[in-house]
Image (cartoon, rainbow, N blue to C red; front, side, top):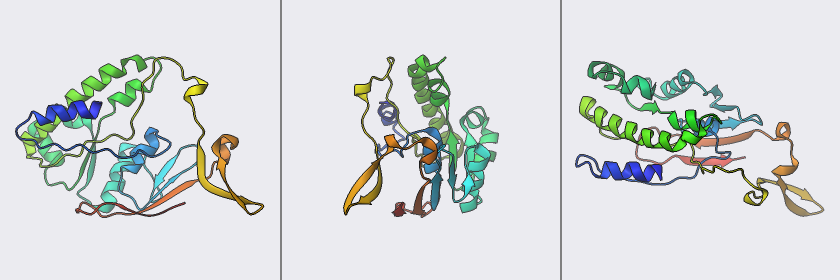
Length: 220
């Protein structure tokens, strides 16, 4: 719904030709995993405590993500939304002009929606985020003639004011298989304690910023 509303605003801009597509989120759909999956990488690992590394490097902070981006191209950069939104034209040109790929992180929905004390503000946070991103797109188009924007989220969310009931939940299974008495069975995650959950490793071939899509080499 947030993406659709932002898309509608961009459609009204005669200088913009927006397109909207959906994609599957990584599981579990939490910030640490989703943010990591959006970085360029050949391999991503997630342990039982949801600590994530990409290509063997930590990626939780802005500085760590910037380092990973620069390992693929020294002209890539990761910036916070506030740093760019509050900058004047000269500063924006200093930060962005001549760069290859610029990642700009906006975290207001997470910052307010993930905390019990402010989770009721999530609708306001979404509305403000849509407004702020739209303004930034217009600002960057005018200041540095940025030609292309990809606006995405690390994962989606379902908003409920009341507690989840047991009938709202479903079984979750590993894709791994167990062979016993010549029968193949899937291992249910509900019977495995968190510390026993194996590390998840995903391997990719990264194609940079050309027109090819990222292709999966394998999953185990």
